[in-house]
Structure formats: structure tokens, C-alpha cells
Image (tube, rainbow, N blue to C red):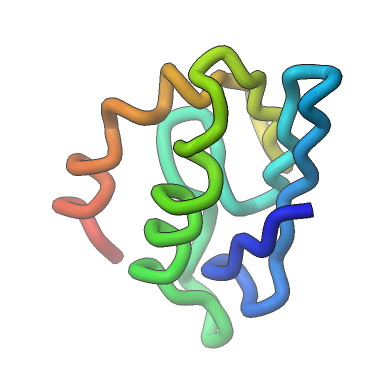
Length: 88
């Protein structure tokens, strides 16, 4: 279990290395961070969680998101600077 706050303070992602998969819920979607528009959410925190805890996983790790299509860590990593620039 990886503590990945940002969408909510107690958010977690479940990493199953033997399956090459991480279940990120609403922390990371295909194309960017999850929702941070709620009073308990925080965009800089979710970006830190993604950078420090998810993008450090092997690039081929499949990301099973809470909504939408799956992706991989390697597909999402190049977009980190763009997410930060967009901010919310």
C-alpha cells in the first residue's frame, strides 16, 4: 500500500508488483492527476504523491485508474512538468 494523498488526505494506491500493476483510484488517471477540486483535495499534494510514489515504480507498471482507461507509469511520467504548469 502506498500513501498517495492529494485527492483526499488518506488516499492510497495499491501496488501489486507480482502483477506489474498499481491501482491508483482517483490519484492518477490516464493523462494526468485525479480530481482536486474538493475542499479536502490539494493539487500540489497529488502531484507530489504521483512524482514521489507512483512515477518511481517501473515504467512498465500498469496503472488501473478509478475512472477511464488504464495507462502505464512510463506513459504518464513524461507529462509531469505539464501537469505542474497547468496547476489547479
